[in-house]
Amino acid sequence: MAVFALKTASRAVVRRAHFPSHRQPTNITKRHNATQSKPDINPANGNGTSIPVPNTVATLPLWQRLGPLSRAFQAYGRSQRKRPYATQFCSSLVIYFLGDLSAQNINGDEYDSKRTLRALIISMGSSIPSYKWFIFLGNNFNYASKTLSLATKVTVNQICFTPIFNTYFFSMQSLLSGDTLPEVWERIKRAVPTSVINSCKLWPAVTAFSFTFIDAQYRSIFAGFVAIGWQTYLSFLNRRAEMAAETGARMATSSESGGKKSEREIEIRSRDAQKIEA
Image 1 (cartoon, rainbow, N blue to C red):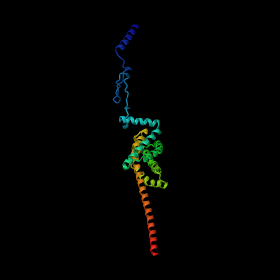
Image 2: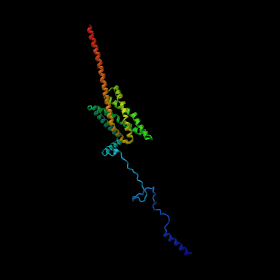
Image 3: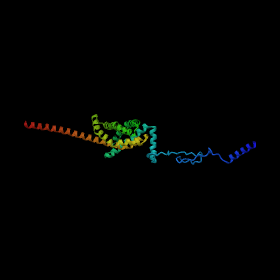
Image 4: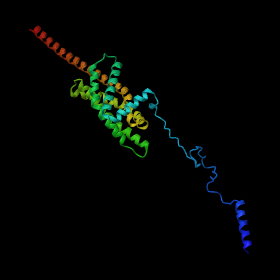
């Protein structure tokens, strides 16, 4: 009996040594399905699992791919973040200065330094309020619909900011020129409605483009480039209003002098008639 048990045990040992188990070893990597991604071929990654690598390379804006000009934009952006008020103040002076020079060149007049000085004074008073207004506009009227938000910003800007700013511009031009309050009111009536109507042809598109594609720190410089042309137009329109006012004043003076001359002639003729009768 003991011999039989010993033979049976030896046969089981021999069978286990020659015939492998049907269980799969745990360290063998399973075959990947067709829907799974390919395994990582990096030797440093020894587990054979796939590591998805997303496309993290962002497309740079156009103004950051212009070489030296890009560095100028970046310097402006850094200055805007560190010293926003000083940057806006200096930028506004440059914009108004260039706009006035361009307007005087278009009019064909000789350079008038007093006009440039008036433009710079107006710039000093409007630079920071304009900057604060567009900060307010960017932080408000933000709805779930981007289209609704953009349309609201453009509408509010045209209804509220444009008439107030244009009234300030033309009234200050008139006051700094030495006009009286009635003459200032006449300047406003002549220039502001025309400028507000024409602004609807330009600034809604500029505002929409700025809030859609331009980063916050670059919006002011983008609007500044457009504002050079706009300030040229406003200066041109202001000069045209000045010329109209001067023409009206000359006509009034000539009509008054003509009336006085007629009265004088009537008086002389009546005296001559009295002498003849005597």
